[in-house]
Image (cartoon, rainbow, N blue to C red; front, side, top):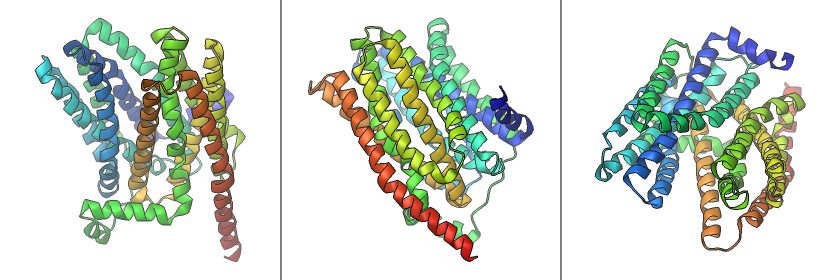
Length: 422
């Protein structure tokens, strides 16, 4: 319990972070709670497996396509007000799904789900960009560890609770409760004070065209390699991890023959690992100068652990190594987030995090599509495919540890030299 004291202390002492964190937890719960009700609604009015798959594609593409504009908005306008707007608008979109009463009105669910995801694409970078503004530099690591651990707990519990609620209460009531959760999230944000460095009048005039603002954000990212490096860490990892997480569904069905029970256990291991990994990483690697190197080793370890998952046929072994894989992945996630928060100017932070989210979303989608195509075309069976994905991920982590780490060390040496010269 002593090792958890800094986290409890932060939540207790920092009112504005506490309110932002509670809002994030409730908002994340809303993201997952209604998901199975949405699937149940589609299944009720359609026998098409294609439509079930299509809703996933709609969610991912909506996130990806709107991310650049979301980052622009998060830098140009007050982030607290934007997050409150997102919560109320997401609540309204969920209530709108209640209008679906026949196969002919099913399109409403797809359209409003797209709207919900675009609003989430705006909420997330605004929230992540706000964390450094409500914490001290000394609190920033703990704040992000709490945020990631909270996501993990919500991930492992939100869908499960939503599934039971859908079965017992019906889809309509679940959508209503989900909408209420977003309104409660907005109430906590309303009570918070979230400082923000505003763009100058000259910046606002110059970037009044969203495309100009988005272009400036991209130029800022690619001209600052010390920011670019951590920004691609999540995308590099999920380029393989997205497909591997998808393949766990097939493993549970076809290899373990355990269906949703097996999948629930494997996904629970994933969620717990994602929460535990950052805590362990914080204790083992206290010097942030090493973090870019650690990101490469995290990718490598994640790939290696999944190779063991591909080799094994024992559910307990799989659970253990999925846990280890996502512990490493969770450490990568938090370290890259903190470096971006520290290295990015506040007026560009929304665009940087939305770009990172865009890369993550595209990489995840491609990873899943390639894995699904390989299985659909009978090019390879699921277990060898997991080992191939894990093996290539291991190679990617090794390349990162050699090349990207070398560039980071050069940057660290240059920064140290500048301090000496001063």
